[in-house]
Image 1 (cartoon, rainbow, N blue to C red):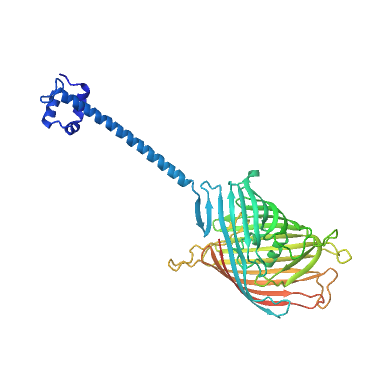
Image 2 (tube, one colour):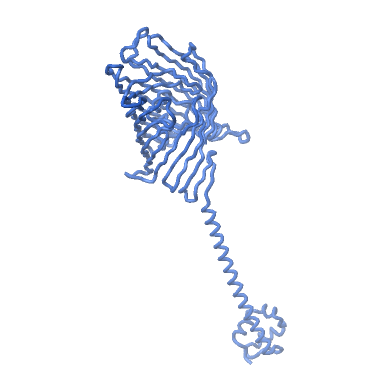
Amino acid sequence: MTMPARLRRTLRTTALAALLCGVAPAAFAQAIATAPQSAPSGVSQEQALSLAARLDALEKRNDELEAQVSDLKAQVAAGQGAIREEVHSQPTVSLANGRPAFASADGNFKFALRTVVQFDAAHYDEKPLTATNDLGSGTNFRRARLGFDATVYKDWNFALWGEFGGSGGESAILNQAYVEYAGWKPFGLTEPLRLRVGAWATPTGLEDATSNTDSLFLERAAAAELVRNLAGGDGRTGAGAFARGDRWYASAVLTGKVVGVPTTPEFSQQSGYLLRVAYSPLHGADYDTHLGASLQGILEPADTAAGPAEATAVRLQERPEIRVSGTRLVDTGPIASNGLQALGLEAGASWKNLYAAGEWFKIDVSRTALGAAPSPFDPSFSGWYLQGAWTITGERHAWSSVNGGFNGIRPARPFSLQNGGWGALEVAGRYSVLDLNDQAGAQGAAAPLGGIRGGEQKIGTLGLNWYPNSVVRFLLDYQRIRVNRLNTTGARINTDANVVSLRSQFAF
């Protein structure tokens, strides 16, 4: 009897299966030899059919197992994909420069904690020491800020900061709180036009464009600080627009009052404006240049009188370039005014580890009256500074279009006794002048009608800065202060002072 074709084919290719099924080797060999005609001797047709059935069952089982394995592979692959998708969809957490930051997987939502703590200590030596120029040595938390910055739905930014430091007498106040839209690129801009409303500090000049955590000295130059607070400064309410490109910056802001309770009642708040442009005309891998200009003004000073009568005035006054003491050595007193304008010109450059910058300011006050008579003139005041730095360890002050100014330095080798790094070391110098005299008159005589004897302040500063890492800084400054001023009778009330100060800071 001839074997079925399928059995013949299976027998030829599955000798091992036949052995496993219990067929004797000799009988299996005989079956192979006589397969074309009949069943082998000793192997009945029933055994052959049983063998075929068992082989069919094995093939079916094998197919089932292969299908199960394929299903398992597909399930594993799907599970791995789901796990990867789940992992990729989780928020990311980072500690860049010590700052805790959280972000969604797509980057559309971000949240970062921010803090600045600056603890200052200063020793003053005044000559001659009087009741009006006693600066008072001691310590002060210049800044103690805590807050957060955030982004939602990719294009909306907002911030909320509190200030718990100051100049020794302040209580906790709001430092900044604003909302900003940054999802529009008109006029071919490569960076979004930022539209902001709330309270914050808009940079009013080159020195102000550098973060207070990156400044060369404990304080900005006196002229820059005074101008900064005319229509700008920390916690100033406003609405404005900011634009920038790779090598330029521009801002325009309408401003209001400073957040916080004023020392005198205000029945109509101040209104003002800030305009500034900055440009880096020459730029390379190891050098940057800067040119800029600013114009700001008080459109209407705060009204401090109730009822139909108005009492509007401006007052220009400034401390020495240290805030451990709140004493002002130069002060115009209140000037009856309906506004003022301040023009600023700025320039700077950095090359490798060298940096230099300077600004000049002119302030014109629009006086409204002088007693019962019209004002004979509108007073003008001025100020300027020049400063420079040499980073001994080689780091560079690079220019940035974010605020239109120079950044601070970051240590190339953070301080570590184990790894031998010493951080960054920098020496700096500055000379500044602030002149708040106008038609001051001669010594020994009363001031001419309308003359203002606010005083002239000149300060030379030498600084040594150590940056152990990108979070911690120490600044040691020596200042030589000279103030020339006449009182109302024409007597000199000059002040010479030497100041040594130290700042310990951490910020992220």
